[in-house]
Length: 301
Image 1: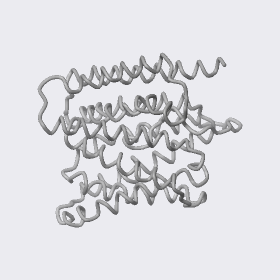
Image 2: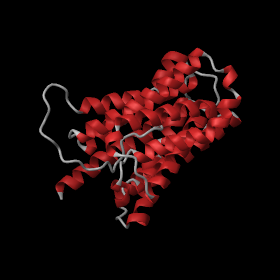
Image 3: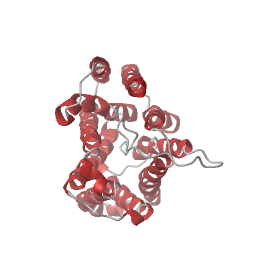
Protein backbone atom coordinates (compact mmCIF):
# COMPACT_ATOMS: atom_id res chain seq x y z
CA UNK A 1 0.00 0.00 0.00
CA UNK A 2 1.73 1.99 1.40
CA UNK A 3 0.82 2.88 -0.21
CA UNK A 4 0.71 1.12 -2.26
CA UNK A 5 -1.82 -1.76 -2.98
CA UNK A 6 -1.55 -4.12 -0.05
CA UNK A 7 -3.79 -7.05 0.71
CA UNK A 8 -7.34 -6.12 1.72
CA UNK A 9 -10.23 -7.98 3.38
CA UNK A 10 -12.12 -7.88 0.06
CA UNK A 11 -9.74 -9.22 -2.53
CA UNK A 12 -11.34 -10.26 -5.81
CA UNK A 13 -12.32 -13.92 -5.81
CA UNK A 14 -10.49 -15.92 -8.41
CA UNK A 15 -11.14 -19.58 -9.13
CA UNK A 16 -8.10 -21.57 -8.12
CA UNK A 17 -6.37 -23.17 -11.10
CA UNK A 18 -4.57 -26.51 -10.91
CA UNK A 19 -1.57 -26.24 -8.57
CA UNK A 20 1.69 -25.37 -10.28
CA UNK A 21 4.81 -27.41 -10.03
CA UNK A 22 7.79 -25.96 -8.23
CA UNK A 23 7.02 -22.33 -7.33
CA UNK A 24 4.25 -21.85 -4.71
CA UNK A 25 1.99 -18.91 -5.67
CA UNK A 26 2.06 -17.58 -2.09
CA UNK A 27 5.70 -16.62 -2.69
CA UNK A 28 4.53 -14.07 -5.26
CA UNK A 29 2.45 -12.41 -2.55
CA UNK A 30 5.33 -12.63 -0.09
CA UNK A 31 7.71 -10.99 -2.55
CA UNK A 32 5.16 -8.23 -3.20
CA UNK A 33 4.75 -7.53 0.52
CA UNK A 34 8.51 -7.34 1.02
CA UNK A 35 8.87 -4.92 -1.90
CA UNK A 36 6.04 -2.76 -0.54
CA UNK A 37 7.74 -2.72 2.87
CA UNK A 38 10.82 -0.97 1.46
CA UNK A 39 8.85 2.18 0.71
CA UNK A 40 9.66 3.93 4.00
CA UNK A 41 13.38 3.23 3.68
CA UNK A 42 13.75 4.61 0.16
CA UNK A 43 11.48 7.60 0.80
CA UNK A 44 13.68 8.48 3.76
CA UNK A 45 16.88 7.83 1.77
CA UNK A 46 16.47 10.86 -0.52
CA UNK A 47 16.38 14.59 0.14
CA UNK A 48 13.85 15.08 -2.65
CA UNK A 49 10.55 16.54 -1.47
CA UNK A 50 7.38 14.46 -1.41
CA UNK A 51 6.19 16.12 -4.63
CA UNK A 52 9.51 15.75 -6.45
CA UNK A 53 9.84 12.11 -5.46
CA UNK A 54 6.22 11.29 -6.27
CA UNK A 55 6.58 12.49 -9.86
CA UNK A 56 9.28 10.05 -10.92
CA UNK A 57 8.01 7.24 -8.75
CA UNK A 58 4.46 7.42 -10.10
CA UNK A 59 5.47 7.93 -13.71
CA UNK A 60 7.63 4.79 -13.70
CA UNK A 61 5.05 2.84 -11.71
CA UNK A 62 2.34 3.66 -14.26
CA UNK A 63 4.54 2.54 -17.15
CA UNK A 64 5.56 -0.67 -15.35
CA UNK A 65 2.01 -1.73 -14.43
CA UNK A 66 0.77 -0.77 -17.91
CA UNK A 67 3.43 -2.96 -19.50
CA UNK A 68 2.60 -6.03 -17.41
CA UNK A 69 -1.20 -5.66 -17.79
CA UNK A 70 -1.33 -4.35 -21.36
CA UNK A 71 -3.21 -7.41 -22.64
CA UNK A 72 -6.15 -6.54 -20.39
CA UNK A 73 -6.59 -3.15 -22.01
CA UNK A 74 -6.69 0.33 -20.55
CA UNK A 75 -10.40 0.99 -20.37
CA UNK A 76 -11.80 3.47 -17.88
CA UNK A 77 -15.24 4.28 -16.51
CA UNK A 78 -16.63 6.51 -13.79
CA UNK A 79 -15.76 4.10 -10.98
CA UNK A 80 -12.17 3.51 -12.08
CA UNK A 81 -11.74 7.27 -12.56
CA UNK A 82 -12.75 7.88 -8.93
CA UNK A 83 -10.52 5.00 -7.83
CA UNK A 84 -7.62 6.59 -9.70
CA UNK A 85 -8.10 9.87 -7.81
CA UNK A 86 -8.26 8.03 -4.48
CA UNK A 87 -5.14 6.03 -5.32
CA UNK A 88 -3.21 9.15 -6.32
CA UNK A 89 -4.25 10.84 -3.08
CA UNK A 90 -3.27 7.96 -0.81
CA UNK A 91 0.14 7.67 -2.50
CA UNK A 92 0.97 11.35 -2.15
CA UNK A 93 -0.34 11.60 1.41
CA UNK A 94 1.73 8.58 2.45
CA UNK A 95 4.95 10.01 0.99
CA UNK A 96 4.25 13.36 2.65
CA UNK A 97 3.56 11.63 5.96
CA UNK A 98 6.75 9.56 5.76
CA UNK A 99 8.77 12.72 5.14
CA UNK A 100 7.31 14.42 8.23
CA UNK A 101 6.97 11.67 10.80
CA UNK A 102 8.64 8.30 11.43
CA UNK A 103 8.21 5.50 8.92
CA UNK A 104 6.55 3.39 11.64
CA UNK A 105 3.95 6.07 12.35
CA UNK A 106 3.21 6.60 8.66
CA UNK A 107 2.71 2.93 7.76
CA UNK A 108 0.81 1.86 10.88
CA UNK A 109 -1.55 4.84 10.70
CA UNK A 110 -2.18 4.15 7.01
CA UNK A 111 -3.04 0.59 8.01
CA UNK A 112 -5.99 1.87 10.04
CA UNK A 113 -7.82 1.69 6.69
CA UNK A 114 -9.63 -1.59 7.61
CA UNK A 115 -11.16 0.23 10.58
CA UNK A 116 -12.72 2.85 8.32
CA UNK A 117 -13.90 0.03 6.06
CA UNK A 118 -15.68 -1.69 8.96
CA UNK A 119 -17.43 1.56 9.87
CA UNK A 120 -18.38 2.62 6.33
CA UNK A 121 -19.19 -0.78 4.83
CA UNK A 122 -22.60 -1.16 6.52
CA UNK A 123 -23.55 2.34 5.35
CA UNK A 124 -22.47 1.84 1.74
CA UNK A 125 -23.22 -1.84 1.10
CA UNK A 126 -25.84 -2.40 3.82
CA UNK A 127 -23.77 -5.14 5.44
CA UNK A 128 -24.22 -6.09 9.07
CA UNK A 129 -21.99 -4.44 11.69
CA UNK A 130 -21.02 -7.25 14.06
CA UNK A 131 -19.84 -7.21 17.67
CA UNK A 132 -16.35 -8.29 16.65
CA UNK A 133 -16.27 -5.33 14.25
CA UNK A 134 -16.94 -2.98 17.15
CA UNK A 135 -14.16 -4.65 19.15
CA UNK A 136 -11.54 -4.19 16.43
CA UNK A 137 -12.63 -0.60 15.83
CA UNK A 138 -12.26 0.17 19.55
CA UNK A 139 -8.86 -1.52 19.70
CA UNK A 140 -7.58 0.37 16.66
CA UNK A 141 -8.87 3.70 17.94
CA UNK A 142 -6.97 3.06 21.18
CA UNK A 143 -3.86 2.05 19.24
CA UNK A 144 -4.09 5.15 17.04
CA UNK A 145 -4.34 7.41 20.10
CA UNK A 146 -0.97 6.12 21.32
CA UNK A 147 0.75 7.67 18.31
CA UNK A 148 -0.10 11.08 19.72
CA UNK A 149 1.16 10.36 23.25
CA UNK A 150 4.38 11.97 24.42
CA UNK A 151 6.30 14.96 23.17
CA UNK A 152 5.78 15.38 19.43
CA UNK A 153 7.26 17.97 17.11
CA UNK A 154 4.65 19.93 15.12
CA UNK A 155 5.76 18.24 11.88
CA UNK A 156 5.33 14.80 13.46
CA UNK A 157 1.76 15.63 14.43
CA UNK A 158 1.12 16.85 10.88
CA UNK A 159 2.70 13.69 9.48
CA UNK A 160 0.55 11.48 11.70
CA UNK A 161 -2.61 13.26 10.56
CA UNK A 162 -1.58 12.95 6.90
CA UNK A 163 -0.97 9.23 7.40
CA UNK A 164 -4.45 8.84 8.88
CA UNK A 165 -5.91 10.73 5.91
CA UNK A 166 -3.99 8.40 3.59
CA UNK A 167 -5.59 5.48 5.43
CA UNK A 168 -9.03 7.01 4.90
CA UNK A 169 -8.38 7.33 1.14
CA UNK A 170 -7.14 3.74 1.17
CA UNK A 171 -10.37 2.64 2.88
CA UNK A 172 -12.57 4.31 0.24
CA UNK A 173 -10.35 2.73 -2.42
CA UNK A 174 -10.92 -0.74 -0.89
CA UNK A 175 -14.66 -0.14 -0.67
CA UNK A 176 -15.06 1.15 -4.20
CA UNK A 177 -12.89 -1.57 -5.78
CA UNK A 178 -15.73 -3.95 -4.85
CA UNK A 179 -18.18 -2.04 -7.04
CA UNK A 180 -19.43 -4.20 -9.95
CA UNK A 181 -18.34 -1.59 -12.50
CA UNK A 182 -14.76 -1.75 -11.23
CA UNK A 183 -14.50 -5.22 -12.76
CA UNK A 184 -15.80 -4.16 -16.16
CA UNK A 185 -12.34 -2.95 -17.20
CA UNK A 186 -8.76 -3.84 -16.34
CA UNK A 187 -8.62 -3.62 -12.53
CA UNK A 188 -5.12 -2.21 -12.89
CA UNK A 189 -6.56 0.82 -14.68
CA UNK A 190 -7.08 2.66 -11.41
CA UNK A 191 -3.43 1.99 -10.48
CA UNK A 192 -2.15 3.12 -13.89
CA UNK A 193 -4.27 6.25 -14.17
CA UNK A 194 -3.85 7.09 -10.50
CA UNK A 195 -0.08 7.11 -10.90
CA UNK A 196 -0.31 9.10 -14.13
CA UNK A 197 -2.59 11.63 -12.44
CA UNK A 198 -0.16 12.03 -9.56
CA UNK A 199 2.79 12.36 -11.95
CA UNK A 200 0.94 15.10 -13.83
CA UNK A 201 0.03 16.90 -10.57
CA UNK A 202 3.60 16.82 -9.22
CA UNK A 203 5.43 17.46 -12.52
CA UNK A 204 5.84 21.23 -11.92
CA UNK A 205 7.59 20.59 -8.60
CA UNK A 206 9.94 18.05 -10.17
CA UNK A 207 10.77 20.33 -13.10
CA UNK A 208 11.48 23.22 -10.74
CA UNK A 209 13.88 21.13 -8.67
CA UNK A 210 15.33 18.96 -11.44
CA UNK A 211 18.70 20.70 -11.18
CA UNK A 212 19.35 19.18 -7.75
CA UNK A 213 18.49 15.56 -8.67
CA UNK A 214 21.60 13.36 -8.49
CA UNK A 215 22.32 9.75 -9.43
CA UNK A 216 21.41 8.52 -5.96
CA UNK A 217 18.03 10.23 -6.21
CA UNK A 218 17.46 8.71 -9.65
CA UNK A 219 18.25 5.27 -8.26
CA UNK A 220 15.69 5.75 -5.49
CA UNK A 221 13.06 6.93 -7.99
CA UNK A 222 13.66 3.95 -10.28
CA UNK A 223 13.49 1.44 -7.43
CA UNK A 224 10.31 2.93 -5.94
CA UNK A 225 8.53 3.23 -9.27
CA UNK A 226 9.58 0.06 -11.07
CA UNK A 227 10.01 -2.37 -8.17
CA UNK A 228 8.31 -1.07 -5.01
CA UNK A 229 5.03 -0.28 -6.81
CA UNK A 230 5.09 -1.65 -10.36
CA UNK A 231 6.64 -5.08 -9.91
CA UNK A 232 5.10 -5.56 -6.46
CA UNK A 233 1.59 -4.98 -7.82
CA UNK A 234 2.24 -7.42 -10.67
CA UNK A 235 3.57 -10.12 -8.33
CA UNK A 236 0.65 -9.70 -5.95
CA UNK A 237 -2.01 -10.01 -8.64
CA UNK A 238 -0.19 -12.97 -10.16
CA UNK A 239 -0.23 -14.75 -6.81
CA UNK A 240 -3.96 -14.09 -6.41
CA UNK A 241 -4.59 -15.18 -9.99
CA UNK A 242 -2.81 -18.47 -9.37
CA UNK A 243 -4.97 -19.46 -6.44
CA UNK A 244 -3.73 -17.80 -3.25
CA UNK A 245 -6.65 -17.48 -0.82
CA UNK A 246 -7.76 -13.99 0.16
CA UNK A 247 -7.08 -14.77 3.84
CA UNK A 248 -3.55 -15.96 3.14
CA UNK A 249 -2.84 -12.92 0.98
CA UNK A 250 -4.22 -10.56 3.60
CA UNK A 251 -2.13 -12.09 6.39
CA UNK A 252 1.06 -12.20 4.33
CA UNK A 253 0.37 -8.60 3.35
CA UNK A 254 0.86 -7.58 6.97
CA UNK A 255 4.56 -8.18 6.49
CA UNK A 256 4.57 -4.68 4.98
CA UNK A 257 3.69 -2.63 8.08
CA UNK A 258 5.82 -4.83 10.32
CA UNK A 259 8.91 -4.78 8.10
CA UNK A 260 8.72 -1.16 6.94
CA UNK A 261 10.03 0.44 10.17
CA UNK A 262 12.53 -2.39 10.62
CA UNK A 263 14.31 -1.58 7.33
CA UNK A 264 14.37 2.12 8.25
CA UNK A 265 15.82 1.37 11.67
CA UNK A 266 18.48 -1.03 10.33
CA UNK A 267 19.73 1.21 7.50
CA UNK A 268 18.94 4.75 8.68
CA UNK A 269 18.73 4.34 12.45
CA UNK A 270 15.30 5.95 12.86
CA UNK A 271 13.81 4.68 16.11
CA UNK A 272 10.04 5.10 16.62
CA UNK A 273 8.78 5.88 20.11
CA UNK A 274 7.73 3.09 22.45
CA UNK A 275 4.16 4.41 22.42
CA UNK A 276 4.08 4.29 18.62
CA UNK A 277 5.35 0.71 18.55
CA UNK A 278 2.74 -0.30 21.12
CA UNK A 279 0.03 1.41 19.08
CA UNK A 280 1.24 -0.30 15.91
CA UNK A 281 1.24 -3.68 17.64
CA UNK A 282 -2.34 -3.14 18.84
CA UNK A 283 -3.57 -2.09 15.39
CA UNK A 284 -1.83 -4.95 13.58
CA UNK A 285 -2.94 -7.59 16.09
CA UNK A 286 -6.55 -6.38 16.10
CA UNK A 287 -6.83 -6.40 12.30
CA UNK A 288 -5.07 -9.76 11.90
CA UNK A 289 -7.26 -11.43 14.53
CA UNK A 290 -10.39 -9.91 12.98
CA UNK A 291 -9.33 -11.15 9.54
CA UNK A 292 -8.80 -14.71 10.80
CA UNK A 293 -12.03 -14.80 12.84
CA UNK A 294 -14.02 -13.35 9.95
CA UNK A 295 -12.63 -15.95 7.51
CA UNK A 296 -13.45 -18.80 9.89
CA UNK A 297 -16.97 -17.50 10.44
CA UNK A 298 -17.56 -17.29 6.69
CA UNK A 299 -16.18 -20.82 6.18
CA UNK A 300 -18.51 -22.17 8.89
CA UNK A 301 -21.67 -20.90 7.15
